[in-house]
Image (cartoon, rainbow over all chains, first blue to last red; front, side, top):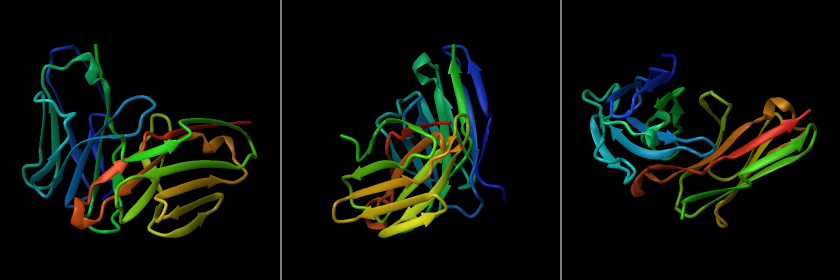
Length: 114
Length: 111
C-alpha cells in the first residue's frame, strides 16, 4: 500500500456543473477525512467517516456537498452545481481511530471553477 | 474562534537563522502534530507529540500541556525548509477523536 491516493489531481469545471472526487485511504485505516484548503490557509474540516458511517459534517458542508464511503474503503465527495467559491484544494486523509493516531494525507484534488 | 491558533502567519528568514513557530490550542488533546506542506505538494507529518520535546535533525518540537502551547524550532534554516508548517491537534477518543488544524505558517528562507 503506497498511502492515500486521490483522483483526479486537478479538475477544471464550469460553474454549475457537478464534480466528483475519489479518495482511496490506507487499507487498514478505519477513519477517513475530507478537508478543504484555500490558498494560505490550513485545512478546514468538511466531514469524516469511521468505516462506512459518516460521523460528523461541518457547517461548511452545504447541501450541495455530499460524501459517501459505501463499503468502508474508498470515499467519494460530490459537489453539485459548483460555484466559483468552491475552488480550492480538497484533501483526503485517513487514520486509525485511537489516542495517538496519525493522519496520512493524499496529494489532494485541486478544483478550479470557471 | 479557532480551536488551534498559529503564529506567525508568514515568516521570512535568512539562511542560517533560528526559526520558531508557535501553536496554541483550546481543546483537550491526546496528541499534537506538526505537519509540513510544500507548494503544490501533499502534507507530511514531522512530529507527533503528547508531552515534552522531540528532535529530528534540525527540527525541534516542544509541547507544554498545561499551557496548551507548542513550538516548532528550525535551527540553521535552509531554503529547502521553505514550506507551510501546520499545527494539528487530536482530541482524545472520549471527546470525538477529531483533528483540528491551525491555519499554517508560511515560511520562506532566503539564501
